[in-house]
Image (cartoon, rainbow, N blue to C red; front, top):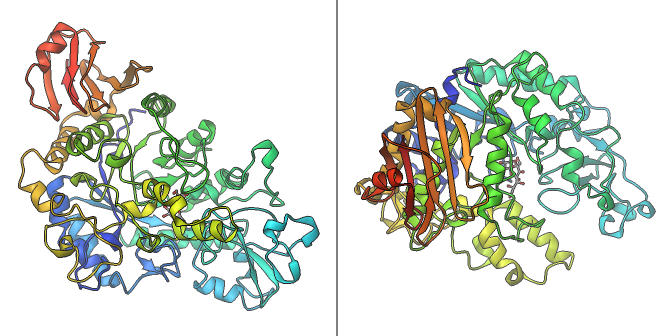
Length: 575
Ligand code: TEU
């Protein structure tokens, strides 16, 4: 609702440390590298940094496999480095949100190491262990255990293959919804919850300002762990998302740790995300979970098939419909997060814009959308430079466990012939698109590192880089600065009502934001041609507040009631 909260007024900038800035020349980004760029973030005008995992980890999933929640991984630096980053941000009034990954740990976490010692060891019940099934009860496809034993059920890992791994030492299987090096924690065990909440409080004590909660709607598994039901369209994700005790667990977390001064954003996987669950996650009521906001996946799954290499065409009317639905869902209570890319998604300008001729225009248009809808915008590193997808050529170019495991599994299972068959799809979809190094300069390795980075730099860095962007008044970076400042200066952007027009128009998105007497009218042309529309708003006193083209006739056009929008043109009027 309209209750004022600092995190509603904020813009969050996501840092993926491995790819942000490398201070020590080992080819991997690190925390001192981020410290060197804090002034850059301040110059951009961000209010919050969300740091993806920097905890001690064998890096099977780039840190989403945590071996020690209270230690910093050597690759990224030390706890003293982390404290220096926290202080450097706080000195500039920038808050710090940490990633909370508690659906699973690394298999190298002490808890799991202990759990593997025997069936009745202290931490055994911190994880989800089951006996296998008779091979006769299972599909041949899952027949992967010893003596033809099948896993406990037919759930699939999000990263390919069965969601179960056999542990020889104790002759049982453990659940891993992600990589086999990411065993799922057993949230049914109250000791697990207590340890997680203690750890969270420990970080709050260290002065952080919030948590981004990784796949937090997976923590409650259904009783009896029922298998999928393909005939009824019930997949693994449908079994494990928004489970029976999820609100109870999050309610406990709220009680034990959270308060409204923290920014908490829950990542809610699965599609669709039922609105009744969504409302409860962010509700402030007594039986609500009290999160600030959530990430759903409905817009970023529009163009995705079932497999990581499968694509579908997306269209603007569907994209608008998703956003309209969620703007409406949280119109009176709750709050939206606004994102078009992150470390798991391709670059937004390549996906929803035009990364060729109209790269700059469309990057600015998409930015304007994110920063003028109702909710808290998230900027993913490099987005403010208009960074694009990477032109992947061979399978060796990829680093991401989701991409690698899924493709290898499918090739082994004979479902895919070879890399060539999936190349185009991976080019479009792979998470590695987002993970190439941030392009700072036109020097070798884009100024990211002194030596060859862990993943290749996008070859467009001589043209697309922070130095060039800052030297150019017309750049994507300079435009983002204006967007962020505009939000700071205008309450209507934060708290105004959202009202859409032209919902069936295939190229144009238009809406007003209204707060008391104040009204903004935003119109965006999602096409590489000029599109003309009749203005849906009556306007006399008009000013053009933001646009990615020269103002020219914009004001007169609105007065006259006919808008002629150039390729990827966006206009924000006050009227
Ligand atoms: O992502 C959850 C998730 O659902 C993704 O794996 C998603 O399925 C995929 O990226 C779509 O291509 C979170 C983290 O953001 C991700 O980086 C982790 O790999 C994952 O959880 C496991 O911790």
